[in-house]
Length: 184
Image (tube, rainbow, N blue to C red; front, side):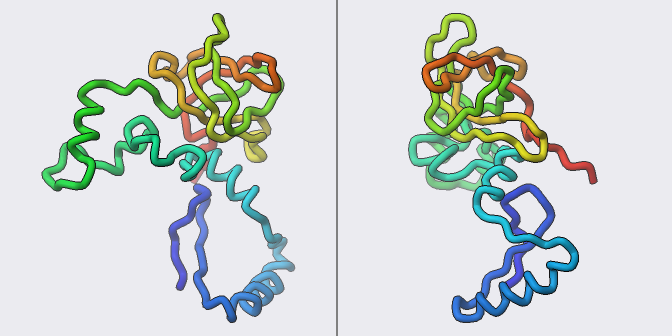
């Protein structure tokens, strides 16, 4: 099965094949692509590419404690449509009350790489205002980036925040996402 459901933000395809046929297909593809510079990559590459696009990873950026509105995925749950779905009433109530936290993208201003679980701090008071869910050194942008949930008051683009890295506060700034914008 050939699908175009890419999870990295890049044009591409996924192949689904019977397990017993996978080794032969892998060899045929890598042999055919080698002269053109094809190199296999692992989940680390997938993870940095998906983060550059701010694609949420279940277990890191979204889980059963988050909702699609605070995760920036409101486009998935058309609340204004006539169609009903499980959870619509709860999400409508959350939207009416207002979000208390939001998933934001940030650039590190000072040296350091934010990692899952690091504290996000108010830049001036150093009070905890959230948690990093994903962070890395972006290979495409050549700078450290991350995403995390912050109190809604700190979610505006341009907000100065800090990330606690190994016990030290490092400056960061909330930025527009996706981080990487491909030219077409």
